[in-house]
Length: 101
Image (cartoon, rainbow, N blue to C red; front, side, top):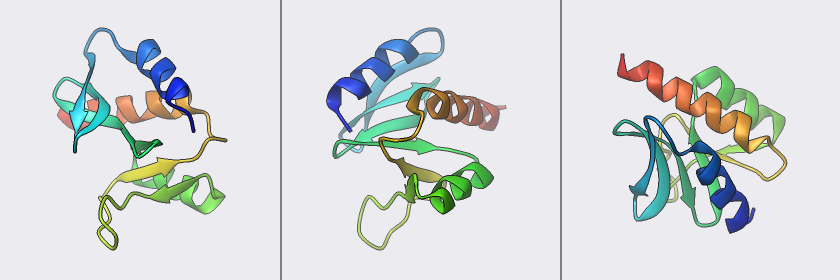
């Protein structure tokens, strides 16, 4: 994963309700006040619906997010570099948007 790829994702995503901010001291993207993506230790972490999160984990393109060892953050997944970051980020934004209603 590269910083450049994250920067491009941010550039393509910011606008309207989507803004950049910080979460856990890391860069992130939020819709309104709710984060849907963060750049954590050079890794893309997304908040996705449970079924999609599980699918990524089973496919080997995602791992459950543990900001501290042994403490999973419910609903968040670390996405590897082979995944389609743009599509998954859009899915994450739509999912988090749906939670606000």
